[in-house]
Image (cartoon, rainbow, N blue to C red; front, top):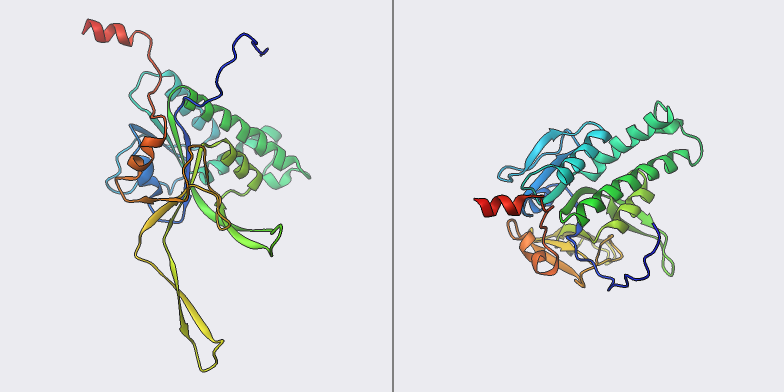
Length: 271
């Protein structure tokens, strides 16, 4: 597409966000996603499901990459009242992406690819995923992607190496690409304090244990201990309480408004 030099506009984002929420088990990732307006739930893992009391509409288990794309197309093209696209989970989708890469290249497993072939094959498909998610965003839908967490040691630039929480994807380059495309990457975790106590007679024999009240936070600004980001000038970590998560972010984002259906205004006026 050629640049139209007659259309110089302010560079701003007038669309709802792509939000990645990731963290450990049972911290409220799916509950948080269910608080967004009119969620459409895309389930890519057999063991993924909303907790009791979280009501989301769904077509059931997604078993192939094509079925995943079909549901995005349904949301973009069909007449419906859904406003938020919820994926549960990114890590389960990665398995479908790997299956698709193998099918395209005639591999039995991803390990059959030589040298950088597996990495390049999955990267190509994730670019397709990101393009479709961006289409949802620019059509007026919010996108909430749920992911589990893993740790990986980062080489320190001016320090020793240290562990860091990040998205639980096998291909970390793909995880980085997805995080880059998101408007908000939130790390949900509990507030923890470290208690020390003497472990013996020697002064250096100290035992440590983690303690906490169960208070949950969503980190939305990068820290040495975890990956996070936002494009909304938010800082630090925001508190998360069940039923109030979306309300915390609502004042800072463009709320989803969905696709304008042709003829909807006329039908409403006629009614």
